[in-house]
Image 1 (cartoon, rainbow, N blue to C red):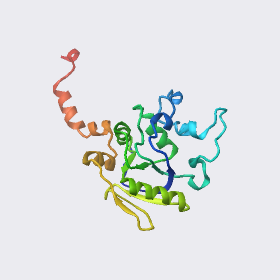
Image 2 (image 1 turned 135 degrees about the vertical axis):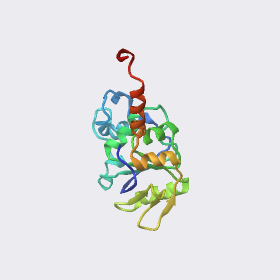
Image 3 (image 1 turned 180 degrees about the horizontal axis):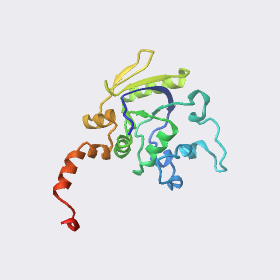
Image 4 (image 1 turned 45 degrees about the horizontal axis):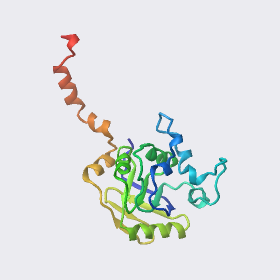
Length: 200
């Protein structure tokens, strides 16, 4: 898993609340077994009409937000079902982090397991970043996980809370398998003392 330490990127604003996982990646696209290929279907029902043609004026399709790697969204982001595919779709589209005033717990946990950061700010701070992303051309932010801070070049700075263990995993690129493999030597030593029954 790719470590997350400091990331600077263009910001896209999605000024909607209660964005659930079926809106992030609709259920009909959950047939792939890989973690890749989901980005093209991100927010599909908002980006495309029933005939498959692109809808007009969806924010992520505006040229000024092309290549955005940080999403600012309304509160309660990632609510709904527990599908991990929602994080995969955001990451495959090119996002490294989402900023909101609140997240569904399961979505945030799935983010941690995939090296994807959820940044929780106050409602006022998130609203200010939303405004700046809408009004400032090519607006960029730096998310510094080492300092637990979000900042821009126009004087905005805000600290964000994060669980210490979650922060450790993200900084070091450790998913559940990576955490287990930190104890590979101890596991091998245990296995050497306990051979399979057929070998006894």
